[in-house]
Length: 277
Image (cartoon, rainbow, N blue to C red; front, side, top):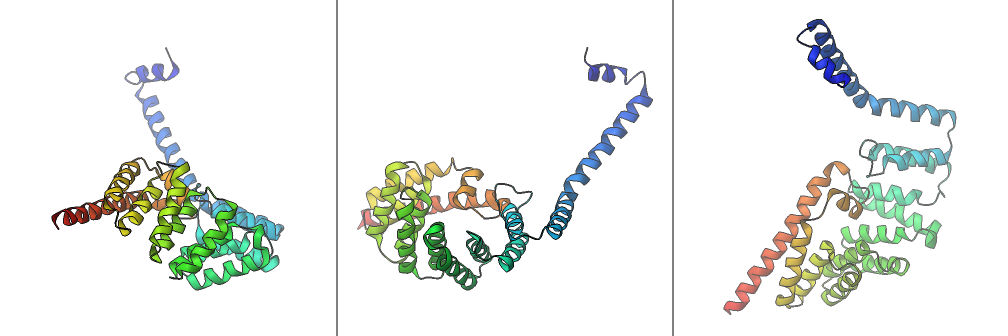
């Protein structure tokens, strides 16, 4: 008989011990909850103290990276990440990807002008050493409505990573915005050649086909996108949108599924109207 089983069987005979065990478990539970809730406080104290003892640019950058890692929800804190990145920048603005990260934070906060100036500085100082910065600039330009400039930056980034499906999908997004539907179709088709079940690429491919007037193939691709979106996980969403708050991952997954459903509905409606004409 196990130790726990013996304790359980002894409860009716020894209620004092039973009460003690219950109280002990309850108190231990409170301590666990307190330790978890106070973890950010002790972490911040530790970081502040160690940085004060060794105020190096690299240490500040490393702490910034810790707080900008969406795969670790417990440490994710955009404001604290920006605080440490700014400390690093005040000492050594030439740390690789430093202004890249600062630009991403400004973008996430919706401050596109600051984001653009930061990523421009990153590219002017690091250039080809940080090719991902062209991707980020393309994203910022896209949200600012400068679609052709965004497309050019995506094209430049894709020279380094031609099979990056997220870049191909974002490239297609700005091409669609620029009414370059055939180019958007070609970009997504390129991605689907090596990632045929990718729901993001399928969805964008369907939109491109729809805008080109190919309702039959658009319907097929939209249905594939809707079906594939049902298997999207929060981990997949966070990889697709790195840097975004992991706390909204569930909402992001549902929003994407809704988008594929709405796209399918729009194409079906257009197909029905076309059949009636």
